[in-house]
Image (cartoon, rainbow, N blue to C red; front, top):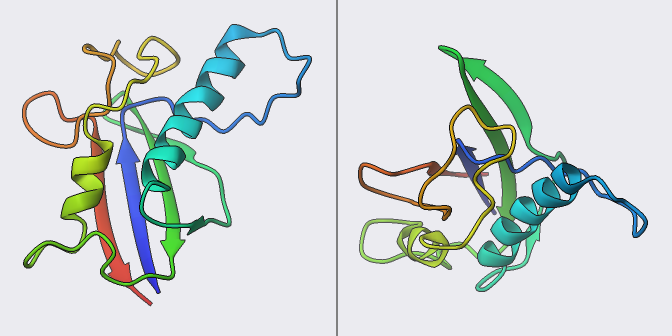
Length: 125
């Protein structure tokens, strides 16, 4: 079973709003989390025990999260075990003006380059 760790500057707070929720921030935060999980779910079913947690490092907010997949190697290309996951997530639209430290522009998940705002690592268990 693979465990993938996510570290991102994007506010992916899982708020689990009810149908009657009116707070646009809570709805947008959940929307970002849903966009991330749907992007991951294009190739694999995921399992997670905890929702993303916020940490502060050098006055910057980071969201940290981990999930598991049963299908080892589902995203593997050559020697990179999550190459396809990075490709799948890159460019997914998000709402970049929530409680993150800076506005994310363009408002997309970016998995590489100068505008990178999400980092993924894999471990085997």
